[in-house]
Image (cartoon, rainbow, N blue to C red):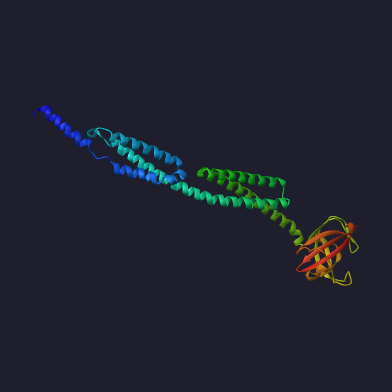
Length: 311
C-alpha cells in the first residue's frame, strides 16, 4: 500500500473515532425534564425566567435535530453539551427564582394584613383625636399621612394581584412608613398634652387658686389674682347642718383674708352637688348668674365648699 493510501486510511480512522461519539440524549432529556417539571409554578411565580429557559431549550432542540440529520462521521456534540449546560443553568435559576418569589409572595400576604390593620388603627386614633378637638394643623398632618398610607396600600394590592411582588412589597413598606410617621407624631403630641395637663393641674394640687373677679371673704375684699389656700381651725356651721372650717387665702406669704367653708365628706357630696368635684385639687365656678364664686377644695376624701360674693 502506498504512502498516500496509508495516510488516507489513517485520517479516516481518526475522523471515525472523533465524529462517531454517542449523542448526550440522556443528559439533555434530564435538563429539559427539569425545566418542564417547573413549568406550572414558573408560569405563576417566574414567567420571565421561564421564558428564558424555554428559549435555551429551543436552541438545544434545534442543535440536536441538526446533529441527528448530519453525516454521522462528522457529527460533533461540543455545542450540544454547551447548550445542555445552559439549560441546566437556566433550570437552576428558574427553581431559585420560583422559591424566592414564593417567599416574597408569602411575605407580602403577611405584610398586607399587618399594614391594613395598622391603617385601620390609625384611622380610629385620628377620629378620636379629631373628636377631642386637637389642633387643626396637627390633625391635617395626620390625615395627610393616613391618605398616603391608604394610597400606597391600594397600590401594593394592585401590584400583588399582578404578580409584581417586589414592587408590591415596596408599596406596602411605604404605607407602613406613613402610618409610623403619623403614630410617632401623635404620640409626641399626646405626651406634650399630658405635660401641659400636669402643669395646669399642679397649682390646684398645691392648693393654689386664681380669682378672676374681686370677691368678699368674711367681709374682706380679695382682689383678682393668685392665692394659696390653707386649712385652718374648725369654724361654726355655715348652713346649720354641716361643720365648717376656716380657709385662709395667702398671697406673697401673707394672709389676705379668710372664709368659712362647708365641710362635706365624699360619701355625702352627692347631696349638695350635682356633678363630681375635683380630686385632691381645686375648682372654681360662678353661681347664681355670677353673683357668687364657689371655690371647691378637695383633700383626702373631704370637700370644702367656699361661697364668696362678688364685689
